[in-house]
Amino acid sequence: MTPTDSSPAKPVADVILIGAGIMSATLGVLLKALDPTLTIAGYERLDAVAAESSDAWNNAGTGHSAFCELNYTPERPDGSIDISKADKIAEQFELSKQFWASLVQERLLPDPTAFIHTIPHMSFVWGAANVEYLRKRHAALLHSPLFKGMEFSTDPARIAQWIPLVMTGRDPAEPVAATYMPIGTDVNFGNLTRALFDQLKTTPDVHFQLGQEVEDFRQKEDGIWRLKVQDLASGETRIVRGRFVFIGAGGGSLPLLEKSGIPEANGFGGFPVSGQWLKCQNPAVIARHEAKVYGKPAVGSPPMSMPHLDTRQINGRKELLFGPYAGFSTKFLKQGSYTDLFRSIELGNIRPLLYAGARNLSLTRYLIRQVLQSPQERTAALREYYPEADPADWQLEMAGQRVQVIKKDKKQGGVLEFGTEMVTAADGTIAALLGASPGASTAVAIMLELVQKCFPERAASPEWQARLRELVPSFGQQLAQNAALTTAVRERSRRILRLDT
Image 1 (cartoon, one colour):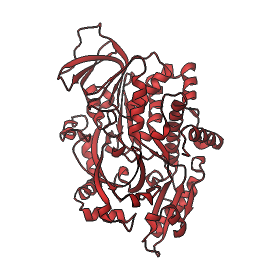
Image 2 (tube, one colour):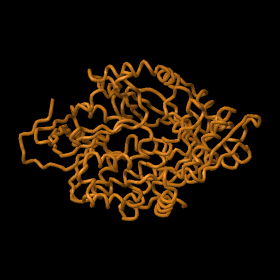
Image 3 (cartoon, one colour):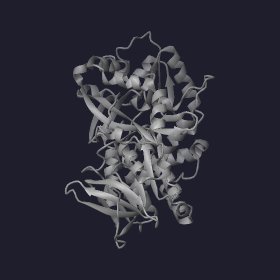
Image 4 (spheres, helix red, strand yellow):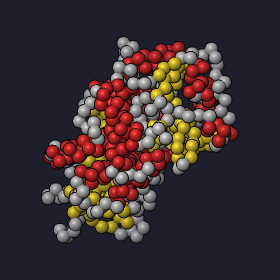
């Protein structure tokens, strides 16, 4: 059933946000900062903000800067290292820090230590071939000002100073290497999202409701979108209207995008991947580790499954996690339905789904192996990073659910993507964000792109351009090409976000 609207007198929101995660929160706050007169309506299916992928327990909490994530620096066929993606991701996270710092400075966000902390980011590898790869990676990254200050070592004693848990009990004859970046961060995206929504809800002309499910869309000749929304508590449905709609519902974005009926949505599919963590229960062990340590992912595994031993700050407590262990579920959301995958299949995306599936059989096999892992196998994976790990100290916890993007491709029929994909209508009145990693860390960069794409005339105006540069001082400039600017914006963010505390 499609929405109908016989009452033109109903109010029309300038912006409708679907989903109460970091993406909707960022866009809402950004738009109100650019134009305080905008009217915003928001709807979330669950009864809490940041309850899915933005929740601290459902993501790695890494401020993704490519300091430690090896999949962002692939080795070319000639043996050289491609750092272009690392530069891009590092710059995107700097945009996020600048925006958050501006919000703190303008008292639109509370104490930043509630959501961000400094923690060293490290890559750790073993074996001669991997050591050589990490050496080349480090040398390549130092050509960019975004990676200034990164250390490299093959000295077990030096590495043990950085990460004693990882080195204690390790075979001394085994070649090892690590990189160390002291300015990495741990981000509680759940706390950040809630703080952004708290600010947004105190702003005039913003109305956000929980327990509301968007069931359908229709755009009329006047360009206004009509959304059919159900109150899950009462069962009542109503029609709401908006000039611009953003679908930021995480794994739930794809089914909603399909319902919009825009041609740009044709051919997109989704492949869900679930995750689990091992959570340390021993305070003495937790106290001995102070870093985010990333290794090389297993062959055939998705990027979100890169193994890492992580120090976290969650709800005022220091935590230690290892994982994630990947898995497969037909749900698109952690609190979704097992029919999600099947209901997302339609005529327009069957071909891309089949082609992408045929070319990614190794991923399917990997996920099956992960699902069937025994506790002993999970402990064996942990001991590759913490040789003396006692399984009695660790508890298995469910992580978040991610939906990897599948899209049509002229040459290959369909391809599986592991990044994020923004889909917008030709008229710029509706946009949806699909995909997963690096996700939340790049929310500000993605929303800056969305604003310029969907509000082009206003974004190009002198007023909005000046305000964007106030909020994000490096806006419109390339940090990777400007060492002085990189140093300046990092120092500003460090000071305002209190990243030394």
